[in-house]
Length: 268
Image (cartoon, rainbow, N blue to C red; front, side, top):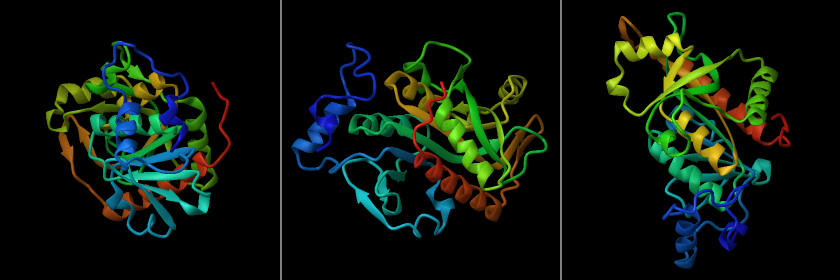
């Protein structure tokens, strides 16, 4: 059983005494019933929202499955169990943040979110990679962790390490704001206009909530996405190039593993 079971919770401890349900209590309940995660927590977890796009990339790594979570969580043996990849935990901010909360309670200090996004620039193409500098908040999850505001911010250190890993691999990327929504089928022309005027280059469903939760819980969170389709005032551009998106997702996975397996960056 990890140290989380004895009462520690993230880097800052419980944040709000008014919270009635804590992730550490859920894990303790699972441990009591013999269904909680075993062993030491990894130092970093990659939250992968579209595991199917990775193809055999993850299968090439020898892994050990960790039980106790509503996700397929696998330690990468090549990293000595320091890094794990989580898949199949649902779509959108609420599912991703609920998993992050439980992993923080387990003792995980660092996270990178990778997934697909809709490009908001006319020149965006399937397979383009974006490292999130911020997340414009059109979601509901982030509001439960941060006061109202336009954007949620990632952790500078792990974001820089992710960008550096992409640079070492020679893969071009854009560092820019992304936009987070809970309701993709309610993406209106007015929303697209608002996001693009605010500097957003892509729309996805998880980053704002993850950044907000990470900030409140005192853990590091970064996010990157691969453009799959496009949105503009003219409508939805479905130019989904499966090969290009799959290649981009594999590149993000490799870069995220490399970034999280580095010593923690002290950039503020």
